[in-house]
Length: 435
Image (tube, rainbow, N blue to C red; front, side, top):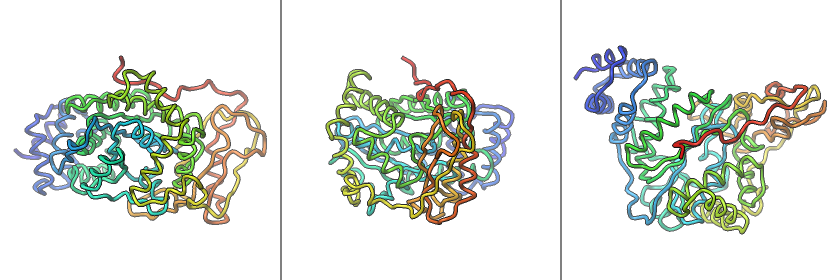
């Protein structure tokens, strides 16, 4: 085969065979295909798309470019969760111990933040001593012992995806649904999980800006999972405003602890319980969602989920005392209020802008090797639909420097204030597959 022929075939809207895709990925990993040809292929795919079969073949080819974890020694149905990324999205942190304490093993391989979206691993590292870099054997042993672990992917899982993603980032092809879906699934199948819950974000703070885009991505993820023999459910969830009231690493850990203490923002609590319920059904621990929701609510009320989080922290080298005293988490030295210029109702929030504001404070990365300030971030005092008086605080900036005028201006401009409260939008917009 020749790479130029495959580029031309995709450019002209053709469908690649499994054999062609296997050859393409193998040749690229073996450095027989240069980056410039792979870039051309990615752009052709961006414009022409892929069939379900092509997407699955690409996911499996990238999966087979590296190792695959074998979790068969761990009893039970292993269930993982993946979010496509949002602002204030800390759901994985309370979700993992909640599901684990109810008997479903959660082998979660997670990621770091890049750009305006936060990363679960960065948030966990704001807990003193918490280690996300476990060996494969330690990872398996921990999931077998306490039914939960949240770790970074090893360099041997789906190496083709790692190289291709770096190209997508610099060739304006990140938003391609086939490339996103195959990237996610190559890593998730490699992690050895039996079932998956996808949280596909949609809105101004998400990579998928429209419901149509988000649904196409959700359908692609579920279709690839089905071909892999992995049970899957995808939830389309709102990202037209941040989740909860905190944005920033240690701030989001504190909010997660509040959820595990059966407190905290209603939207974070609802999404945590809903995703937990789907994981419990997929994991065979509940016959239906209604029963599973009741199980999850009970585990939050009686302290089992909180105890499981302490267990997770201790197992990965962290200090569980932060659960009892969240003030031991990194704290910003300065708190700067951002106030409303006019009275009315918050009618919209530019979620992406708030994520970028936290990035400017040092709480997010512009490049993968940027160091983070784990203490900084935002605490929202107002969300969409809430009334606000002139001069009232919209958000509190947590900063390491006494002046943050540019960030304050960005935050204030992110809030739109109007005369009437907007219609309430559902947090969970759709669930696929539909029963």
